[in-house]
Image 1 (cartoon, rainbow, N blue to C red):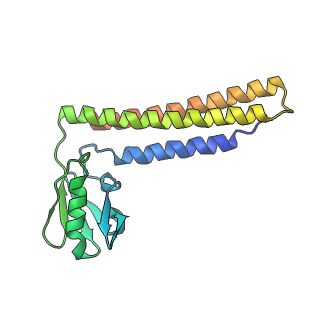
Image 2: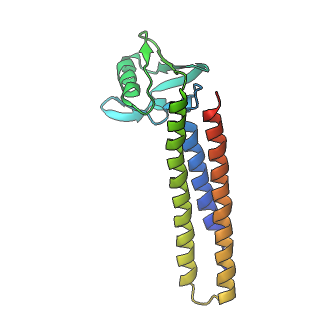
Image 3: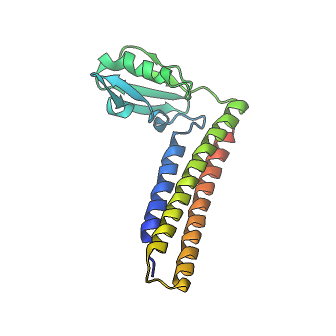
Length: 181
């Protein structure tokens, strides 16, 4: 019998990756994960923003960044401004950086949903690749009867369908959240 536990684990990790990617998508409310993709050049190397500062959501429209080393304030502000996808304009007072989160327009919301749908396709392609790798591995097993191969193939297809549905449900939830005023 062909064991699909390994494929299940791989697919679960892809769905988890997708969830993490959806956390980064802006919904109009301030959330520290919005800045998780920001890399800041400090001490001669690039580091994730959360490793050089503390990020908190003061309210629904404001992120407050407190650098561990105040000398890095300019570098942090520049790194946030440089990420055009976020479209944020930070302001600092020498100790903390305040990042106001502007309200989203209808057009910007649709654009964000479209960008997020690219991540959906990326995740689904990864699931299909896992399915194809499993099929190749299954065909490589010589001492497996045709019935067992067909059953295993159906099990892998069902697994792929199950995880595709999970991704679709996550995306629908996120797109509804984005489009809600």
